[in-house]
Image (cartoon, rainbow, N blue to C red; front, top):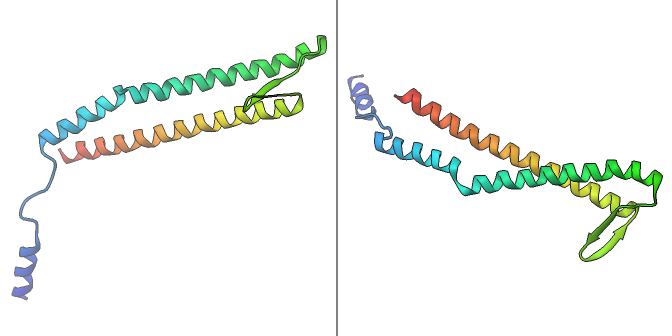
Length: 129
């Protein structure tokens, strides 16, 4: 049994392993810098542009019903340089709006997942102290 205890003592860690204060500071600075990066601003700009496009499309389609009753206006879409109108154009425009909404949802989910990873890392860091 004495040999077992000796082996057990030899297998125990000789020192604690952890990140140095310098590494922690570098990680914290990199995390803060990531939030200020132009990529993040570009992503929010793209999301804002998609929202503006969705709102514009919604206003166009909602306005179309009220205008159509008083005049003969129709939905016109250009696909690969070719003009399409009528029900087909309306269906294409609605599909584009649905794709934009899905894109915005995906971006929001990815941002939330990345933020959760950062939060978990920062929480783990604070527990180690």
